[in-house]
Image 1 (spheres, one colour):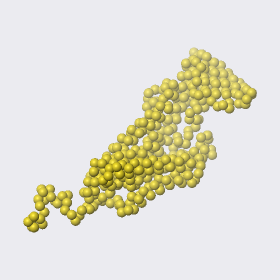
Image 2 (image 1 turned 60 degrees about the horizontal axis):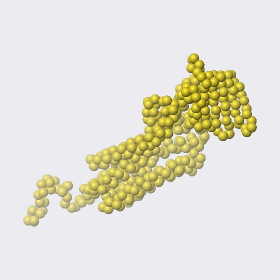
Image 3 (image 1 turned 90 degrees about the horizontal axis):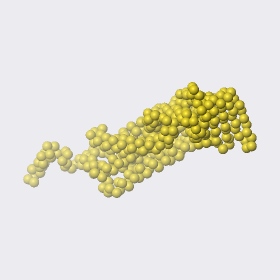
Image 4 (image 1 turned 180 degrees about the vertical axis):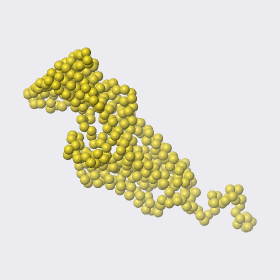
Length: 395
């Protein structure tokens, strides 16, 4: 790229990076607010909160990076047109490649970032988020029973302990589970002990009884000597197993949904695979769209603003239709084809509109080759001397 192209690319890159940082911070704050109450109740450290915030970044980044690129390019093209920079560039004889190359280069970098994060980084981050939530849930139960009071640790789930033994054993454990309207369970045990494991823990109960009223008017009762309760089953937020979003891409492609267990329905697995391999296509689809709506200098500023607004609305519309197609891609082969076809066809259509009418990605050429120009007059033009033919004519 020449000096002007590097200048345009740097401005677009800087503004897109700023837009990406701001949008990530805003969305990340809303995501953390959904978890912060749970983390505070479970007495998690500030480091855990910071780790959770960092692990949520890849998911947010993949979703908003294409829009950050779109916004960054739109704002810079509008600013350059408002400051007459595009007009000066064209008047100097530079071709459309001067602003096309920076747009496509930034689109390619954004697409590469989305691809790497979506396929490799995001699944690992999602798995870490799940582990943090599981550990926080186990700590929440420990905090509840250590308080020595009857406490609701989530909607419909209550736990209480009468007293504590010399070695930290729980004496007189009572659990009520009313999270489902079809069944209410009551568990009472003489003693219990929390056994922490990585990512959660178990509640070991001894000498107790479990009752449930799965049918109206009928109460079933089971006495037990020892009962081990997986605290994951009392978490209710993310389920026992990892979901498809938390599986590595290679493992997900090799997964047999029929034997994968709960949460791995074939439609969910297919939808997640399609999402990972379509997210990165949208920055590339937005690039020719920007050239069609925002390329070239315009003398009427309001017209430029309308065109750039059209670029933004078109980009959001394309992404919205893509989300709709992706939502049904796990259940319908046609929807899956649409999920891939929407960004590809958008790129093809706007590329034809941008380059089919004589606009070419080529170096600029002097449009005033046959007219005198101060840019081609050499030293005489710089000094303000008259051209030789004027002197000969006595002008």
